[in-house]
Structure formats: C-alpha cells, structure tokens
Length: 293
Image 1: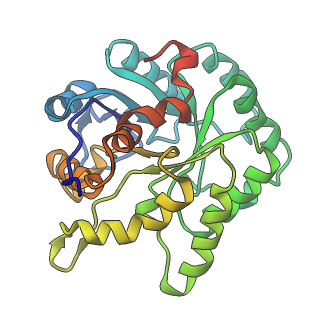
Image 2: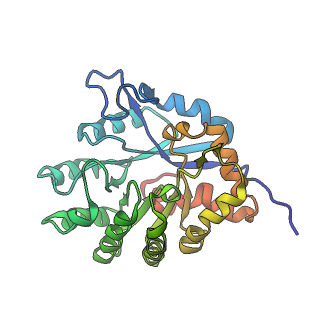
Image 3: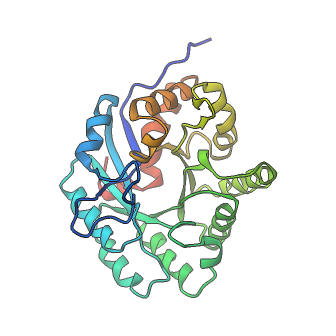
C-alpha cells in the first residue's frame, strides 16, 4: 500500500478577499473593531502564500458596493498572479445591464457572487422579474456564479436556479462550513446530492478548518468524515481549493490551513490532489478561455 503523500505542487487559491480600510471611502467589510479590519492587499497575501507554491489566486468580492468592482479590477491589473475576480452585481438593480456590459469586456472579470448575504435571498429573488434574464447573461458571456454562506435555504435556491439555467456554471462556496442543524442534515445532504447531479456545479471547499471547545480540530479523520459526502457528490473533478484568506485567519493561519488541507487529502493519488489544488479551477472559472494559465 502506497504511503500517504502530501501535495507539494503548484496551487491556485480560488477564494481570497482584498480590501483596504485606508481608502477615502472606507470599506463595507470588515467593520471597525473586527479582528480583520485594516488592509488585505495582494502583497500581504503573497507574503504568506509564496512558501506554499501558490502561483495564482482568485479574489471574491466581500463588499455589496457596486463601486468596489472597479476597485478590485484596478487592484488586480497591478498585481501579477491575481488571476481574476468574482464581482458583485444584482440582476434586480436597474443598472445591472449597463454595469455587466462594462465588466464583461474585462478578462479579469470571472463572474458574480450571489447568495443569502447583503440582505439577499436567492430562493425568493430568482422568481422576481428580470433575475433569471440577468443571470442568463453570465451563461452567454461564459462567466460563473459563486454562491455565498451555505445553508439549507441557499441550496434549495441553487437547485431551483440550476433547473432554470442548467448551463450556468455554479461554484458553491464554503460548503464545509454550512450552517445546518442536526434535524436539517438529511434533507440538506439530499439537496446537495441533487444539485451535484448537474455537471456544471462545483464545490469550493473553502473554510475547511473547524474548531470545537478545545480549539482547532487537527484530526484528519474528522475532515475525511465531514467531507466524504461532498467528495462523493462532486467527485475529484468538481471540487476545488480555496483558502478564504484572510477570513480564515480567524480560525487558523495560512500555514496551518494549508497543512491541514494537504494532510486531509494526502491519501489520494497525486493526480487527484493536483486536480483539487490546481486544475479544477480552470474548468470552474473557464480561465483558459480568457487566456489564463
């Protein structure tokens, strides 16, 4: 039997956040007093990630402000290794079509984020006039949709959306940390399995590290058990790595997060680990279509 081997190859981190509280307009998140309030910029990310052979990263918008799409775009243009960003626009905003038209000309624009945050409700919002037509533009432009803050209601919303737009690539963020009560768990798993039946749906396994009353859980068996249904549902071809830096720092630092995730996956063949840490992100975000990689 082959001994477990932790992955040591190049990584693309599919989920980080950038912000700078020193801007004149400030930031929407994190708020003053939050442990992360301050600056989270590309140089800060490379300072902690370079030792782990991270060769590229994707930024996911953490602000509901329309203007922050432009701030991210300007920041990434000056930051080699930042492969693109998932922005924030609402199809229910009357300015959506104009804003989207401006963004879709940009190769660094990889898609939009929509979920149950920023006072939004995907399950309810998608039945409102114009919503599906707006997201159809993602399909037509070859972009993806990231979801946010998974719970049973969000997964039901994604199921409905996947039925309405089966060709839309959907990246379900943060599934390992989904907020699910014990009584909701069986139904939640069934809905996740049903959602995963669409080959255009991917699972971003960000927010993997977990804590209990004793602190950070370091036992790989815990994570194997917790993530087994996701791995089975989405397979080795549709699971991808995201660190959630710097938000992940509230649970574990970057080095610890990397070590824990690599340890969890070490019993998989190197080819499978390479898919998870690097290759699957190209499919989820159609990076090669934009000349990336």
